[in-house]
Amino acid sequence: MTTPNPFGIRSVRDRLDEIVQEYRQRGDVPRLLDRVTQLAREAPVDELVAAADAHQEMHEVAGPIFEAVVAREPENVRALIGLANAFWLTGRGPDVVGAIASRAIAVDPGNRAGWHLWALTEPTPRGRTQRWQQVCERFPDDLLAKANLADNAAALAGAEDDPVALKTAVTTYETLLALTKQPAQRIALEQALAALRGGGRS
Image (tube, rainbow, N blue to C red):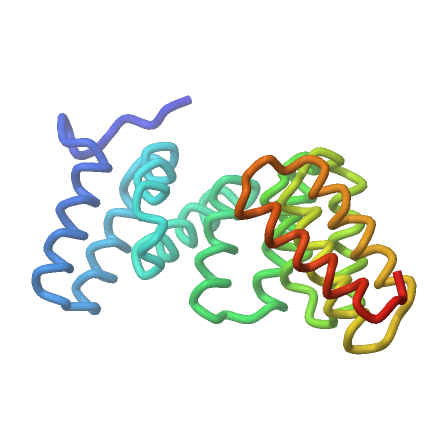
């Protein structure tokens, strides 16, 4: 059920746009945070999330809003993903972001963004490669996950001289090459494969 908008005919998006515009003109961070926090306390959740999505590139804006929404609705997957992304891009660390991503996955196991953040936040190269393998198994058509798997497996193979990781990287790059039509992407994939095969280990 949608909560009535306490701001009357002015939408939450309009209010947030006004706050952002003032911040860009004045550069007053404390005032920005105060106004965003006040808006997040009062506005309807669905409108808040939509407004924050429109300013997700501004993490000083999106982060506090998503944090407030999650406090009000702990199982709001859209807000959990937005908060995890904002935290990741502002350097909050893999443990914090990974925990939020895991919460999102627990609520909605079909949310790809949650799985991507979960894989991305694994700190070790081997563990990260294994996580991207899990994501690829869960979402076989996810080309971004395949690209991340290939890149991480290639890095692992180079760092640890791991033949299994090398095979995974080569096989995954070959799959991507077969599916890719963009010339620039094909060139990049061909170069990656040539580099991996250069040692004669594929």
